[in-house]
Length: 170
Image (spheres, helix red, strand yellow):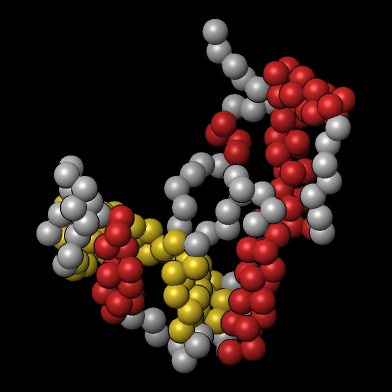
């Protein structure tokens, strides 16, 4: 059984650089104040979304992480291989990043990822055509092998598409 508080205390120091006072001084000491988590069970994985309230000498931080506990080492290794492939593909696109990897514990078959703040696409109020475009771009990142250069005509069409379909306000 996973020790959520123990893992929170173990990884809290890794987030010290995120805690800075108004003068730019970085935190030197951190401790976990509280945690809460949700658990989701899948085939060979138990996934926990852990929300950590970290106290420090320079203020506090609310940090969320995703902890994946794998059934065995082989399942963890397969997931790490897929994660490395995803990272290498995302390097081609500076505006697309996978959740940052915080820690891998091969003895406990754990992979810990930083949870990135965001929202579901359906809440953005985009047209269906723009949503399809965004999903198409993500699929291209996941399944593509190289980045093609665009000529002026294609880039103009690309920009016209955005101007027509983005929900711009006055």
